[in-house]
Amino acid sequence: MAPGHPLSTIAVALAVVAGLVWLAVTPPGVLASEPVSDTHPGSADGGPEAGPPAAGEPDGLTVVDPDDVVDLAEAELAREGGVAAEVSYPVVPGADPLSDFLDRALTAEVDAFEAANPGAVSFESAWNLTAANDDIVGVRVTREETDSEGTREGYTTYWYDALTGSTHPSTALIAGQGELEELNGLVRDALPGTAAPDAVHPIASLYDSVGFNPAGDLVVEFDAGQVAPVEEGRAHAVVAASEAAPLLSDLGERALRSATRGVRDFAVEAPPREEGGSRETAAPGILPPAGEDVDCSAPGSKCVALTYDDGPGGRTPELLDMLAEYDARATFFVTGYPVMEDPRTVRRAYAEGHELANHTLSHPDLAGLGAGGIRSDLETVQALVYRETGYTMDLMRPPYGSTDAEVASVTADMDLAQILWSIDTHDWKDRKSSVVADRAVDGASPGAIILMHDIHDTTVDASRAIIRELDERGYTMVTVSQLLGATEPGEIYLDGAPEPPADTEGDGGEPEGDEAA
Image (cartoon, rainbow, N blue to C red):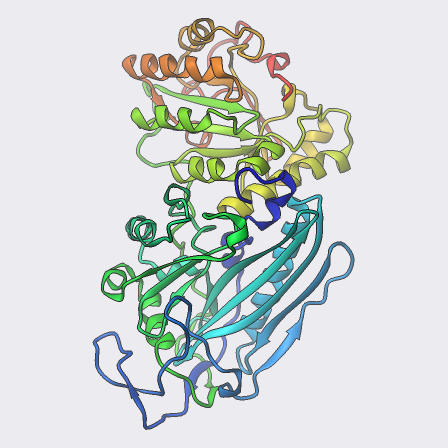
């Protein structure tokens, strides 16, 4: 959703794409098109390639005429109950893995839209092919999501590789995270004047519809409301072929050749040329919550985790500036309604290397709530953050630190570890920045998890002193996942000390200090 719009319009934010592209598929047939006499300069080396000119507009992805694909059919998504859904996808004869993937991916998109948006009314989608040559097929899906605030349009483009029988996200067209970051700069420069360049980040959820125009320029398109006012609809950027070409992966180069050649009598005619089925590799845009630059488990390490609950708040961007100044990382235990109100800050925090974790939709006391209530509250936030970033959170913090066997059971089933804390700054109660800063700094020790709330001005003010002083004392400020390493879903964690202390003292592990939002 665009900032400033009612919270229920979160539905527009993003398609659930990045996590879906790792679904396993089985190998299809190799794609081939009947040779034609026309020539078109669409090859990577600039030489002539057989084929008519590609169709499409300069500011859009190329378009394949369905009549040029032999026996191309359409299937309707079979989904019962819940939000009204009218969803179709292409069926290319001989490419069953692509159809299977689209069925599962679109089902998951509808499910996530419904889970993330209590005001969901309907979900409709249509499709077109943007490429169909040799071993590559591009499928562009246009969706309309309707909630109590209206209808907004979004876009997702998938790329199918017949050699491996795998379907890839649009970010797989880019060679790596560094190249995606370079592309992000070019896209910011190419955006229309009404768009906000600082809303564009090199993450999967924002680069989920990427392709090529007939001239071979790279086209990135954004959902309504993502980077420009929602009433303006689709925002897009066109990056010249000469600038985009060095950033492409091998798949991207093949997709470029496929998209910039016209299609005639395309058909699947042969089995795969490669053995072994699907070979999935990580695509850019999905950022790990734990970096590899420091080993917090090593004896003598001085890692500490700054954690902020209940946000994002109005001054969270200022806090992000402070953290960036010291190359520090933090973990934000976000609450659902603030995420709905300010998704851009959530995306920024994720893009800058901070960890996002689940702090429920409405901050209830989960203990005694019952399995259904616990799951519903957590699932909404999981879906919200997934749609905004492409990242699936694997940590949660129970409000007030209140947990029981039912919470443990549900979180274990949802693959969420429970994170409490070892230092409570009581910033919700004592609104004096110097007091909050002293508690955080004086209580810090290797492995500490420090509890704060980024919704309070005094906490943001205190954080400058906290970050500066911890840095001067030689501490490395890391995410919770980097501090703890692998966690066990459902289990409770208080700290990540490299060597377990002989005993625990003070009020650090007490749960009652966490404030209700």
